[in-house]
Length: 128
Image 1 (cartoon, helix red, strand yellow):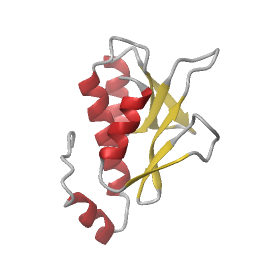
Image 2 (cartoon, one colour; image 1 turned 90 degrees about the horizontal axis):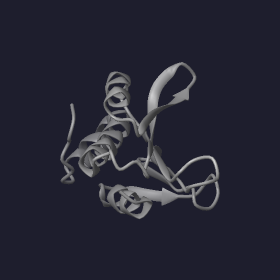
Image 3 (tube, one colour; image 1 turned 45 degrees about the horizontal axis):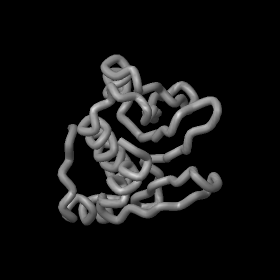
């Protein structure tokens, strides 16, 4: 999946906005004002990548399952994963599921009225 594909998918989810608070070529995708995914263009030290929010137990499983998936630590918690987009072993379907899951993680923490409204907008939850 290309960075453009990731951006298109993220923006297709209900009420997602795109911003570049960390500079050009580093868009973040938010729902309800909270980030669920961040893209980073390739540099000399890393390929194009996307970092997504994830439940800790699922994060451990995904890191074991896919070589392209690496933990992105925030303190001692595993709430974020980075996926190298140049790795051909990462199935597009799994990355799609990860983006949907990241959206779901953020929506789950929003106030009840906002959460309930967003969940009725046609988004299909992929993972529990």
